[in-house]
Image (tube, rainbow, N blue to C red; front, side, top):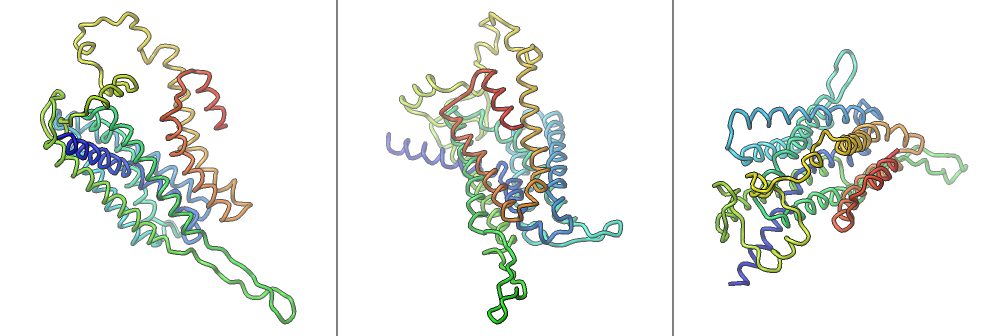
Amino acid sequence: MAAPMLGCLVLTHLLVALFGMGSWAAVNGIWVELPVVVKDLPEGWSLPSYLCVCVALGNLGLLVVTLWRRLAPGKGERVPIQVVQALSVVGTALLALLWHHVVPVAGQLHSVAFLTLALVLALACCTSNVTFLPFLNHLPPPFLRSFFLGQGLSALLLCVLALVQGVGHLECPTAPTNGTSGPPLNFPERFPASTFFWALTTLLVTSAAAFQGLLLLLPSLPSVATGGSGPGRQLGSLGAEEKENEEEDDLPLQEPPSRAAGTIPDPDPEAHQLLSAHGAFLLGLLAITSALTNGVLPAVQSFSCLPYGRLAYHLAVVLGSAANPLACFLAMGLLCRYCRGCCVCVCSHM
């Protein structure tokens, strides 16, 4: 009986990791592919700035989720997650077909298809933050590690794929007769951008299939109630060792029922207020870090790398994207719980 339960538990962790791979894979894939498509699209080196605007507008998807929860209370996160995954899969598939098409706008050519699909994918990725994680509230905390592990692995896989693809360059070989430079030779990438986007589509399809597998698998597990019904509200038995580790190392994803019911009074209510001085300070650090990481630095990265050529820009984008999941893996074992440490991390961005 223990062996089937262990196998079921391992399968659940695997499905959760694959499910997490589809969270921000679409936007991350566009970022690491920018050095390849920038030479073919009319925006040129300004394209990263346009993409930053699209990602910022993607936060409007949060309003749609808010309306869904207001108009359909108690419906859970299953439908929004499926909509997000459908938008991601369809958007990347269309991107593989239409990314290079340009349209004249106000007398100038613009990559309307690329930017429109980037906006659609940004809406899906930003919405995944508030739909994927609430679904994991119905699972024990150890599964949250698998989710973030899969999220980080998706970025690493895309970075490795981009490094294998390489970036094209021009060379002017010396003529053997008189020693002068001959006609320029164009060395393209190992495979085109369309192939990269098809690979990204395959990754997102795998993530969507993993979510459907979770919905089918969870009801079949020996389960305990977590405050509701439905496939997303049942979870598997963990076993004695994992329960002990959970109690020692993990914080619950939800507030304990005793505290939620008010049976245990909070000795210090001010300590948990977001509007306290400490909470406002941490929120300010989070805002500065998010603005630098997701807005300022990506927008100016192309111009800072422009004097060094497309190869330097390609390596800066790919290695920068790979550093984020590596830092997340490091944070799983080394946590910073002090304000001074957080200030040092923010200052390192500047």
